[in-house]
Image 1 (cartoon, rainbow, N blue to C red):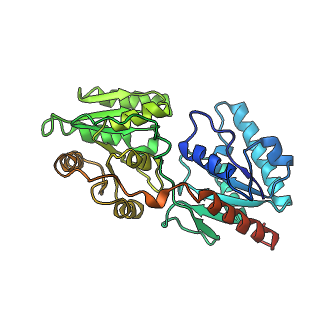
Image 2: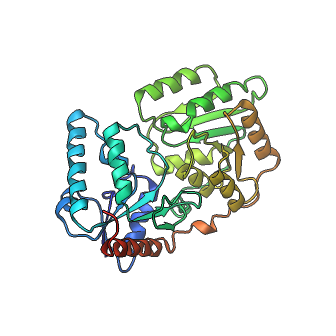
Image 3: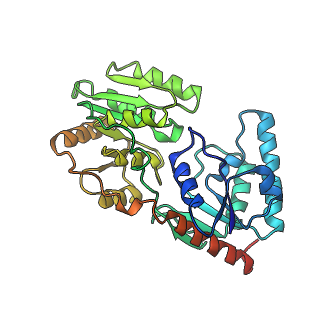
Length: 337
């Protein structure tokens, strides 16, 4: 099977999930793994196209680039309409992280109708009436295996990772500032690159109110990312929308407990990995949530390491191959167009 991915050759800044999936697919027998290429996508020979974040088809830092990407998206639609290329959609999130125009939403809706098979990363992703394969989001233990381990700094809570609007880092800063009198011994470290200048300005404005807050607002290479996580007693990830989170699994892979919003997905994860590793909160994040999390880590630290045995990368390639085969068969057998 010749299967094209929607990602090109992974770069140092590419999501580690893509790095590991790229390697798993390249090692899978029965699959000719093609990285994304626009010319090949329009004119090349392949049987299936796997999409991860389809909204990235439209992105562009300039108007010219955005227009060029929209033209490519239209050409790709024509290719998919006129041929029997199967479409596989990996559902990382329920809604696009970035904003979209009405035209883009219509395109994404068409793409969803054109999808022959879905790969979901957890049991709570709606199937949408489309055949589905569950492939749990893999852990990052091997990815971080070479990073030297170190003890956390006492009293340090942290947020580490790309800072996007939906991740609620502004809410975290406000909640932490409210603990100044009740928990003066706590510190908060925010490390990672904001996606816009406006977000960076807002973080700096709010952090200036509390000398216990440390900001490291830059892109973090993998070793620096892991070191920042390891320096914290616990990670606080107050995402306003959380369905699948590589950040949560990265923290757990480095044996650091996390505080996250309560959803069906995070409740299942808390049960899966064992007591004390995943703490959930309801409603807006508050200083009381942070104090309770910090106290629990100090007084009842989780034992051993979190159980991530369901999330090994062994077999991920074969699971994808089966999904590809099902999608191709469905399209050849008269699937939707």
